[in-house]
Every structure is written in C-alpha cells, then in structure tokens.
Length: 411
Image (cartoon, rainbow, N blue to C red):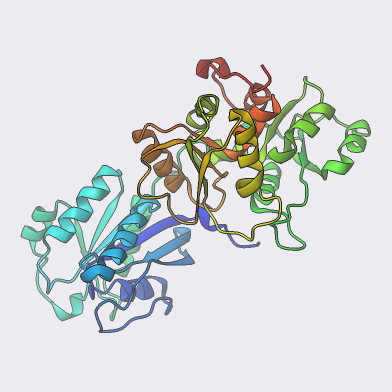
C-alpha cells in the first residue's frame, strides 16, 4: 500500500515487430532484468506490465508486448492483445530494428496512435550493430523523429529518457479526487463499511486514495463504519463540509445526514477523477428506458474474489430486474477490456475504475459512446435507485443536473 497504484502511474507501451529488441530496451531503460530476453522471435507472448520508478519521470508502468508481425492463428490473438494496449497507454515507444525495413506494420501502428492522439517516440534499436548515419529517408517515411539506441552499450538511453519526459502528457483535469471541493481545515466525514472483497486488515483502494487526497489538501478525515455513523454525527465537533459514503449504503446514510450537508460517494468522485462524470450521469436515462429482455453489460476493470452478495453479480442485477419488472439478458466483463462486440447492448454499468488509468477509462467511455450505448457507473446507479441522484451529484457537477433531464427512481 506504500506504492503508487498502477492506475496513477504513467503507462509507457513498447511495441514493434518480433525480435526488434523491445524487452532488451525495457531492461536497458530500467537498468534491471525485468523482461525476458531471447534471440528467439516471439519470446513475449502476452502484454507484460511492470511497475517501475524511472528518474526523473517518476512512477511508471512499462508494458512489454508481443510482436505486431506475429503470424498464425495464435499470433493473431497475440497481436489483438498487443493493439489493445494502446487504449491504456499514455506514451507509445515504437521500436525498430534497422536491419528490417519498416512498412505496413509500423504504418498501421502509427495510424492507430494518431487516431487515439497518443504521443509516439521512435527508437532505432541495436544501433551498436549498425554504426551508420541516421537514415533521413526513414524519418520522412514514418513521419516521426527517431532516436538511435543500443540496449547493449546504453547509447541513446539518456536521450530516450529526455524524450519520455517531454512526451509525458499533463494529466487532464481534475488532477485531484476532491481537493478542489474542500478547503484547508475542512472536515470530511467518510462512511466506509468494511468491504468483504477487501484483503483482511485493509481498506479498499478508493477509500485509501481519498483519505490521502484529503490530507494532501490540508483538510482532515473523520472515518466511521455505517454502524457508528449516527453517533459520530451527533457528537461532531465541527460540521463536515462533505460526507462521502460507499454507494451501497446511500439510502441509509442519506437518512442520517441532513439535506444541508453535501453528500456523495467514492465511486461518484472516481467517475470524475478517472472518467467523464457528465457522460456517466447522463447514462441513467438508459436505466429508465430498459425493457424486459434487454441486453445489459456489467463491467469491472479488475478481477476480485466474488462474495455472496456481490454488487456486480447480485445487487445491481436485482435492482435492474425490479426496475423493469422482468428478466434482463445480463453479461459480465472483468479485467483489461470490454467485449470486442458491443452490438445489442442497451446499457453498460461500469465499476468506479480505480484500478485502471484515466486514459483507459476515457477510451472505454468513448468506444461505448461511438456505439450509441448509455453508460453509467456503480455509484451513479446506486444514487439513482436510492432517490438521491441530484443530491449526490450536486457537490461535484458545476452544471445543473437538470441538463440531463435526470429523474430519480422515486420521482
């Protein structure tokens, strides 16, 4: 828990053809043997994620990938996984072996990167084997600058690091979970039921990150479970500026916290921090439009041990069935990607996204938007069914919730 979470790190994807030296480059860049290196083409078969600290960049995730020119039925599956990495990468390092003539593979990669507005750093690897002048014609053909490097001698690594620093995108606003919502000295009350899915003796990641963000902005956190909330509220010394709860107990907490105190949920804060809150809030219209038999996708960005009353597998489906008065065609996706085919879904319900980076969450939202499917996250859905959606959004959204013509379930 002392490490920077993966979702907060700069994601650097290393792509190129088989045996271009991608794994060797990662080892040279980090000064560690973090990737398996072999002269045999296709050694790396699946994306490999390695959390590192690279000075002066800071905490990063380096992603080693299979070659984009992998062949055969299995090779095509590997290439598909490699290309999916572009949805979560903040920077792409395109590795080229000067002994191979760049062509359709590299051009396809660059085209995909441009579509995603992804910064690209071109690397001519194995430069110790090709001590010649940088081919200007290759630079012109690819349309990107190229850095000659040697993973063996270390030549060019300093220049590559400087290029990474220059290419690192400034984090899009908001750059804080709730720091812009509070002032130094404010009290923030956190209602944190002990999640059955959390490791024993720990809080879950969104709760930990929110507490840290409160402290970083000079405020202080008061933490209680749901059973102690009424007593804590009655005995408060200073009125909290904001109350943040687990969305699953929205209804219970809202009965105790008076309407003149701002109330929201961890997952709603993360909807803004990791994604696009306005789009996710507008997605509740998809809930109201559901009919029996409609196809619904419930997506989680991580895999975890399923508990008996799991929110994604049990609670949310129950709520939606009651809403439509009949059965729905539920599908579930967990882990690194959404299903390739989104055809036919009438609604997508996504988790808070605490385990993925902002770029990946925005890419998911954009892809769903292109398909014309409403998307909502767990916290917004829970607030909707608790009848307090407008109240839960009010502390965060600058625009009025009526912009989306949102109506609570009990209205």
